Length: 157
Image (cartoon, rainbow, N blue to C red; front, side, top):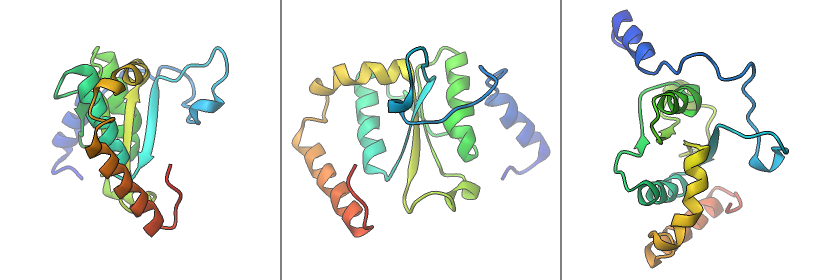
């Protein structure tokens, strides 16, 4: 997916997150974390409406227009490596992903990923009441998401 070996080496250096923070990478629902366990990242897999709603809330929470990145990378690069690289660099930044052609076959139609650092994720609920989410425009987006879920024979949620 890169034009040359040199370009690939530059990419790998750019998204270098350093050594793995633990021996294993465990991915599970937040509800399954027990006392003493804490995720580094919170991951979402959904059609565009939900990640874009979260994106609006992220921008509002941080007050920064660049609080979300959409960098090149494989599916796992955008849900693990890039977010960890941003954390290593002290950047509170979410990563939108699942654009990699190799991972698309494993994703639902129109599905995207969004990885949010835990600290940023925890700040979002407090910002939500003042953000655009309680606004009528978000209600219209939610209706669209429900229509999409119905069209694909899925439940909304």
